[in-house]
Length: 365
Image 1 (cartoon, helix red, strand yellow):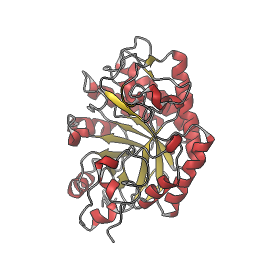
Image 2 (tube, helix red, strand yellow):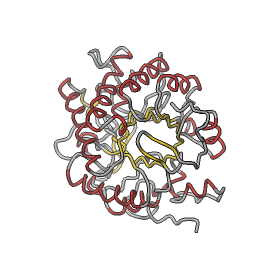
Image 3 (cartoon, rainbow, N blue to C red):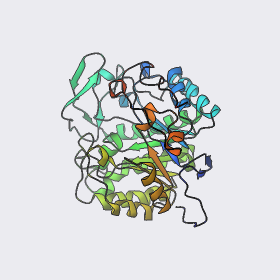
């Protein structure tokens, strides 16, 4: 944690993240955009990310470390060589623009439909608790979520090894690091939350047991690629994908933060979804995680310029993540800095294939 009073907290000033020099304290948050045809990154995606390389750090859309984690249509993976080669297009394009980029590793777990998975892949989760509602599939349109299979002890170990392999692939593809997605109701948070984790073995029951899977993955990935290249995203009090708060949530995340600090992760990225209707993350949670985790803290969720600068000045975090404004404003950092008008995004093209509503938004100039 940065506690030096002589360190600038200017939102638009340079910052350090582990061994990296960032051009500003603005993070482009991960956002699913569903443009990876065949689950392989492509040149259109390279254009999209390079256009937004003015951010101090880009975190990519959720990217699966396993065929089992490709729960949504057209999301990318990073578990085979074709995907690694596709991601090289992206990292090269971003680095040529002077940007830094982490890949977010997202296994969808039970938030999935089997039609979105490759042949032979399975919908897995900590417990066989199916999500209500429906999910889009390119093959069959809207469909009910698939009933997940409870992961065996062997499948848990396989998943950990998949995260390690994907992290090594990420470095081979030119990424500056990886973000483990333990938020938004995907596989890692499904283990953390007792609403989805009904296990009675060493990965379920107590808070320490529910933290175990995430800690083991974080430890294994940090050992494989370096803790200075490993971050994590969490969403305590998040409600997406039927998570929701539970008794002891603050204490569990405080303990998790302490464990992640021991591992030496380069950052914790905490998202507050209250701007989208979820319960607000209490100040007490931020302070507890801040106390336990000594490296960089990224806060995300409904920030504007004034609020972002305020929390930086109060040293509640080191970096601020912005999401949706980046969609229609590839030059968002400049627009924010000079108080320029923001272009509106077209929500009908958030998840459609192709360049429209993706890489065709113009800069202000």
